[in-house]
Length: 355
Image 1: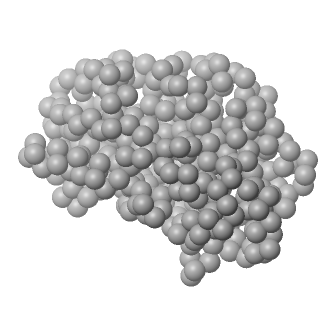
Image 2 (image 1 turned 90 degrees about the horizontal axis):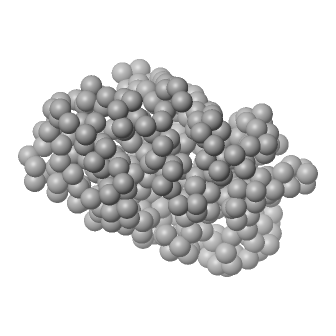
């Protein structure tokens, strides 16, 4: 598999996304990407036994230290981020230290947040090992942790030095985690690229089988889309909000159930169907979306947590502006827009139908 590079163009904060197979095993040298000689690798108890030794070997010419976090969305907290900060302080890390995140979205978000906070910002590198992190959370500089009252309410924008995507790591990804990542893959097609959506309809079986060419193309296309959107709107003042399609509903589902009960991608999958229903798109297009999600083994309906409970949780979403809920809606598949002008009766109908 060839190594592919996509650049995120952000002026002095620009960085490459490097995609390939066995990049941790020697097909890419990370040492040149470090700000200084020292680095702190942040991983978790699940990923570290699988890939930490490979990453340390890749960084053999650097002075590396490691902190291992508990695994799971329920641990995406300020307290867990403090474990990283304590490790940085305890090792006497300076401003030329680089934090390296090895793991899924939770690890990347926590490590990036700690890097943004330590000494008002040190460099960090994303090495995502889940499909969801590879196609979405590792790119774009969103870092943060959850609060008991809402998802990702505490955080900072802090762009990485590089995103190193080794697709070989997906071989050890549990099937449920793979399916959850496919929700974010599908999202990219739904919001801006109907041709990619059609490609996914034809190639979903290959993606579920981890066909190397199919996986490489899907990861590349999602990263291309996200890089373009982030370059245009780094801090989500406009177009970047489109990447939140399904997330207003999805985050509410996660919050209402308790973080970790449903995986993020599972909640987003159900949330995308609800957002499409709220959009009032053609029934044939809604069916296409539901069928594609089902072919990926993803839920198309949320758990019954109660319409008012969902609405209350959505009201605490960080995307609320001027006390108005904002939704990413579809004009049609492949064409999305942001709107605060939603018929409350239609929203109530969508929530009640789901519950």
